[in-house]
Image (cartoon, rainbow, N blue to C red; front, side, top):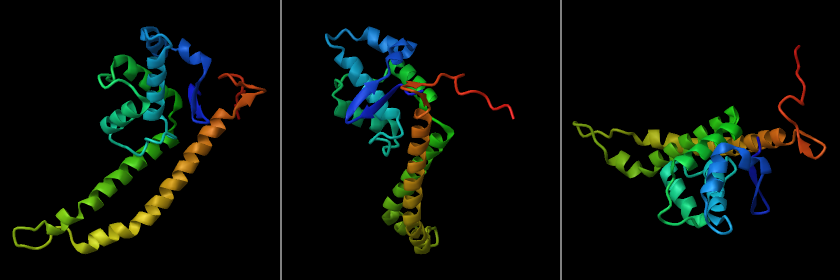
Amino acid sequence: MKLFEMKNHDLQTNEALWGLLPFKALLKRDKSRNKEIVFKEILFIYFYCDIRSDYVYITNDELRAKEIQKDVGLPTEWKIDKAILDAIEMYESKTITPVGKLYKSSLKAADDISNYLESTNVLLNERTDKGSVVTPLTTITSALKSVPGIMRDLKAAYKEVVAEQKEMEGRTKGSRTLGMFEEGFDLN
């Protein structure tokens, strides 16, 4: 389900979005004159959850949330509350695929590898009770040799995720999206 998307640096929402209970609750609670807060919250949800977000590389949820909150202009006292969590849960349940979930897990693993490589000074200085190195230099250099392949694989995985999303979004009939039962069934 395509709830909202970024087009030409502008977040566009599907009108049906406001009929879904979590998003309707966000709209209803926003008492600002031009509904600026709910727009920023929807922008926050997009950047926080969407696989194509420029913030997806920040795998720590708390850090990602703080960065996005600041960048979209939400007030400093704004917090992720139950209403936002409900909207995030719905957005992710309607947009994440097994391929997308696997990609996000791959990003987390790559981040863990990066953290490991950033701690090489500590690893090289760590010694056993007998004074020998705990992590040999060959282990670290072997990890370094894997980095270009990991980067290539992550780029290829990203392209697959984006292609899958375009394929799913491209299932239209004329200018409207096909409903759940309009594509037909293949019973063979």
